Image (cartoon, rainbow over all chains, first blue to last red; front, top):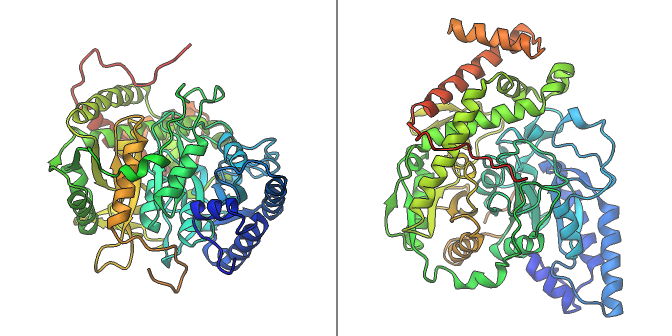
Length: 467
Length: 58
C-alpha cells in the first residue's frame, strides 16, 4: 500500500484483506516512534524486537491460511505498570528499577497478543500512578503533542501522548482516580475506564486496590471498542475481576443514542470546572439530547473519601519502602504516601461506608436516566511545572486537582468513556465524561461514538501540526 | 494545628518513619489537608446500616 492505514480497525481490515503486511506496519510504527518519541518522552522502553517477531508470525500465519485475528497487525503500547515478559515493571518508579524482569505478560497484554496486536513498548507515567501530570523526576516529563510546553496529563501520560501523536493507534493505561480520563481529555483522544472489576488487573502493579481499573485509550471509538472487546473475560487471578461473560460493544456502537435517556451533571461538576470545561459539558449535553441537569448529593464528600482511601491504601502498600528507601521515591508524591500511612482507621472505614452510600445515590439517579455527562478535567492542559491552577477564581495545587471531576466517579466504579472536544476559540482539547450504570460500557461507548459523529474529532497530531 | 503536629510526630515514630525536617513539614501539610477531607466525610450523616464498600467473597 502507498499509504498505510492509521486506525486499529483500518489496519486490521487492511491486513485481513491482504493489502498490507504486519511487517510493514511494525516497521513504519517503529520508525515513527524513533522519530517522534525523543521530543515527547512517551516511551520508557521500545520493544522493537518483539513487535517485529510478532509481525512476522502474523504474516506467516496469514500465508498458511490461518484465521485472521481481530487485532491482527495493530501496534499498541502499555503503561509501564503492566508486566511485559523479559522487562522490569517500573510503574514509573526508580524504586522498582532493580526488580527482576517480569516472567510473563500481564493478562490484558496476553489477550491483546492473542488477538494479534503488536506490542511496541512500555509507556511513561507518574511514579507509582500517584499524579495527574506525568512529571516524573527519574524518567522525565511526557509532553503533550498539541503543545510540548504542556503536560499530557497523568498518570497514564505516556499512553495519552503516544496515541495523540499517532505513534500507535492504541494504548493501555490504568485509572484509579482519573488516570485514563485525564490524559484522554488533555491529549484530545478517547479513553475508557470500564466498570470496576470488568477487566483483569493481574500482572499489573497496584496503587489502590479499592479503585484500580485498567482500560484502553485510542484515537476513535471504534478502536476503543475493538480493544475493549478483545480484553474482556474472567480471571481468577484478580480477586476483584467479576465473573461475567464478555459483552462485546463494537457491534453496538452504531446504535448511537437510540432510546437512551441523557442528563448532565450540574452542581459540584460545574462548581469545580472552568469555563471551557463547563462549555464542553453543555455542548455535549445539547448535541446528545440531554433532558436537563441533575445533581448527585455530597459529591465533594465522595471526592474527599476517595482522597483518604487513596492515601491510606497507597501509604500502606509502600510503607516498608518508605521506611527503608525513602530517597528512591518520587519526591512529588513521597510525602503524600507517607502522610497516608499515618491515617486513623476510623477515617478510612468511614470513607468506605460513604462509598457504599454514594453508590446507592448514583444508582437511584440511574433509575431515570441511562447516561450522565460531566467534564473530564477542570481545565485544558496546564504548563509543565505549573504549581497552581485557577478554577473559577480559586487557585488550587495543579497535581492533585486535575482529578477533581473524575475522582467521585471512579470512587464508585461506574464505567466512563471520555470523548474529546475542540471548542471554538480553544487551541487545546478538553474531554467530557460519558457515565453509565455499572456494567453498561456499551452505553458509554455508544454515546462517545455519537459524539464522534457530530463533534470535531481531529486526526492524531504531532508538534507543528494543528487539527 | 498543634494537636495535628503531635499526632503526626507520634504516628511517624510508631510507623518507624524518620523523615528529615523538610519532609516532615510537607507530611504535616498533607496531613492537614487529609484532616480537612476527613471532616468533610464525617459531616455526611450516614445510616447505621450503611456497610463499608469492600465485600470479601470467600
